[in-house]
Image (cartoon, rainbow, N blue to C red; front, side, top):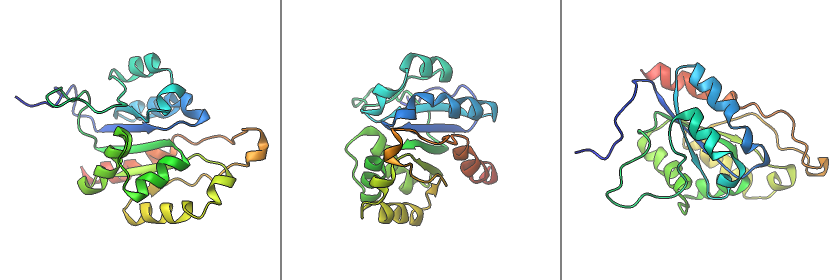
Length: 185
């Protein structure tokens, strides 16, 4: 007997990896258009990111439990395998750990395995300009690009703006991923 969940549909399945950024609570702004574009969606949150979202609302919207911790051996997989992954919002911490191959959370483990599994992946960074100035950041993005990760166009925000972040284009993840997934079908 397989430990995979019973497929509910034949729609492509999108994992949305949510990190601990102030805008994470708006993840529904990616889930809704993904569902409208005929994706099935499951959310994987970093341990810190879990505290930034309304878990009950996200689970009601997707119909799947949010994953944040590894399952025990023998436990069923609560999500179908991913056809694509969107990391949004992606923090400085997650981007740098992912590029370095650090797999100390479920979210990072999934992202590190996505490369070897050739799962189309997009990242929408959400960090401030002071973080982006750190010498580790640009090489991390370059490494992710070299791995085939599609990187969103949003520029880092001004940390002096009091947390004010220009509109986050959640839908850019779908714009990046849809041609890769639908084109390969």
